[in-house]
Length: 273
Picture (spheres, rainbow, N blue to C red):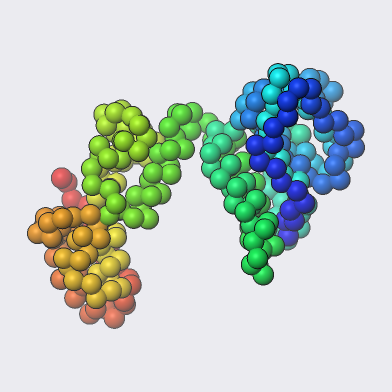
């Protein structure tokens, strides 16, 4: 089990600051640099840009210091590598330039909140979150695909997750683009490049999946479901649903009922727009 020993987020130091532990800290240490710094690796000093990281193994020298008037970093001290069969091939004592800093920081915040949680399962939650963090770090350093170098990549991924968790809150491409504060045209180009599907098509698919869920698992009326999926006009919703699935909403609900598999959805049939 991964065990949290200490965590710090946006820890700020003014003036000279240096960590020098020749034999390490006795545990694993993850440091994420938010400002420029100087790092000692394999006996050589290495300049570190913001949003870089290093993971020290147990017993490894830890040396880093500020090279500007203000220094900020995140840190995580923990134990547990090699336990429970968890031993990912992570590059220890290596400078890592993270491509997914926002997702990484969100996991750190979740770990920080969980350490003061009154839940009796707090240790299990922390264990899972630290493991997720390790995999997230590996994702951030191993994937050199162009979309991850896009400064809007993290925002697009977050937005797509929101679309598929509640498609009804979105009504247009313009509204989606506004979330990232970029033009609709540029947004559509970035979205298609990152996910291989147009944002319009993706939004429609998410809405239809949402409709299928409610038709399969509730007794809500078609009009109520139309509103939940973001359609003010239920006639428009019914027309769109039939075009995408081959069934009217009522026919779809009846088909699911006939199969006796409540909650099991008939796959969406994508038809040309």
